[in-house]
Image (tube, rainbow, N blue to C red; front, side, top):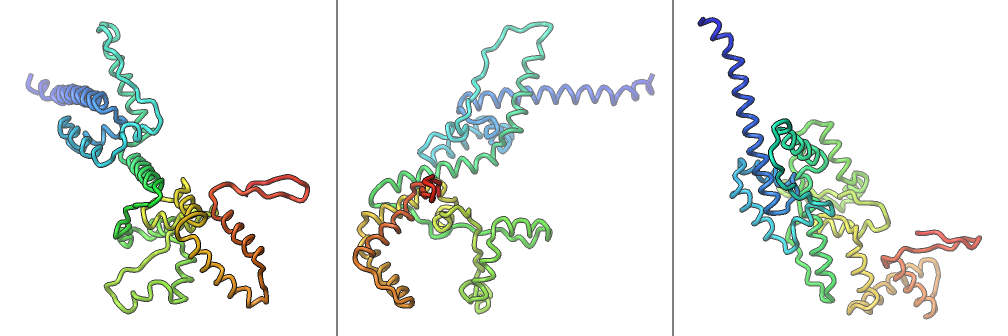
Length: 300
């Protein structure tokens, strides 16, 4: 019977491995449920934190608490991003004929949520959301006590990647035409030829929606676009009623006078005020409405 015993050994080993795997899956599901129930975090984020700590619930909860303390906002609401956080269903009495079905259904739900919303890749959007809220709250104060970092960010070494992938990243992130124009004019990266240890700067591509200058400023200071128009509103407030208003207006008027001399234009005081008011309208975050010749209107 020895050959028979040896031939049956792989089957027995497979059954044992499957049994251990099922047991581990059930344990991980239970730990995941405990984590979500304790924190209210998104299942995808909970799974990533648990996997990072080898499914040690206590260690993962400690990491989550440290992450939560970094921000004043409530992380579960941000990571859920408006989605309904599914509450654990009450335990049902065990049934002999359908004992495995609730577990399988729960695994299917978790797998579906994993496909729709991955934790770590979703975390960046949550961090940006928290940063936007922080900046908006700071900008709501009249004195604008914004925290400006001494650095922003830098790209990793793209030379280690294939040429196709590197070109894709560069096209997506870098404004190539602007970089070539600035370098040829001697305005950008001229220092890299003088000092080999100096880093080259790259112009970031921004959204061409009429707010690109403030998008660029926001990216440089905080790493995200000015999609909430926080900087644009701050600029408009400063130009309309800020302490620097008169100084800025004098500087603008002087510069405009130099341009007018080239074309022989001389503004009256009324025309200067009208030009300044038009400039304020351009700086405003309110949508501009254009009146067409036939009396209709169009957004701008």
